[in-house]
Length: 358
Ligand code: ADP
Image 1: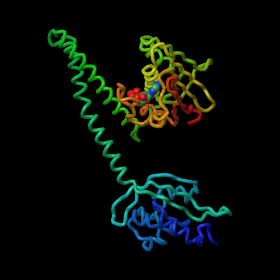
Image 2: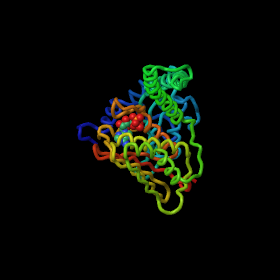
Image 3: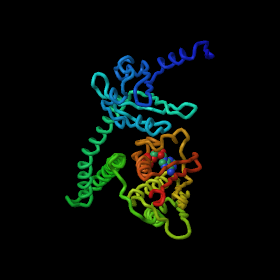
Image 4: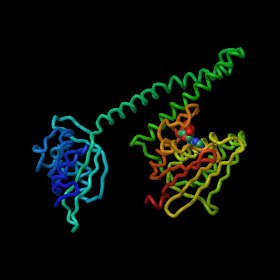
């Protein structure tokens, strides 16, 4: 049959396949390669003729075991719809490559399982850069931590007169140094925390506790700061009984402190902050809303990115929300924001309750 391009459909298929800017391969139900395009040849180093009819697992993963390729294992054996993953392959020259892969099973109209398709891009260079960036930042933060803490301690001693009396000017200069050093210390500690929470090995220390009471305590701890700006904080938890959740109390403390700290920081004097806790069937939802400066729409997609700051003048590290998101996601939850400039901002997160996890 002719297509609307005026060409035979098989020809159109071949043209599309060979012009695709991503690797494309089809395997049959046994995982044997039955199609392999030009981009796949470039990425793997194998020609189409070399791989045709051969095992995908053996050629690209160096194993006869189909579980060696997680995505084909999932999409071929379990017939999962679309699987997106990163996969490591062995190139013809023996080198390893990291691929970003989308795969899906091929099922005909009668429901018969025919095989699977893989679309892939080589992300080895991007991954290497990401790793290097992380390593540099981590090394930097680790090496900064001790000198910063030691210097901070010594400045405090000098200011306390432990090394003799200071002239007013000496005291003034040392106070400025202390303020600046405290900013660096916050940045270093936030970064080390962020790296820790982000690492796959880090798991929340789960406990069963009352979130209603925990939030009340965090609010109490920021009351002085709120009073200084004459900001009214209201708290609306469910009326009856505690709100028990299975989570890491220290980590949730951190999230609530970050959200409340931001609400106070980005709200002008005489504003309002409202914290609401809602108990639902399988989860709990927390809202922290303020009547502050709001967030421009163009910033909203980046607000949870590490090091993102709305303004260069901000004294923050730009890591508070990235840490909050990492923590909430480590608990199987989700965090989001809605905001309009000059009206206010509302951060919300949802956490599964213990019953939902069990
Ligand atoms: P920072 O340390 O800069 O506060 P965060 O990760 O906590 O870092 O926040 C990132 C950016 O998000 C902030 O620089 C600020 O521009 C914006 N932001 C966060 N919370 C609020 C809020 N409640 N109101 C307005 N802007 C906010």
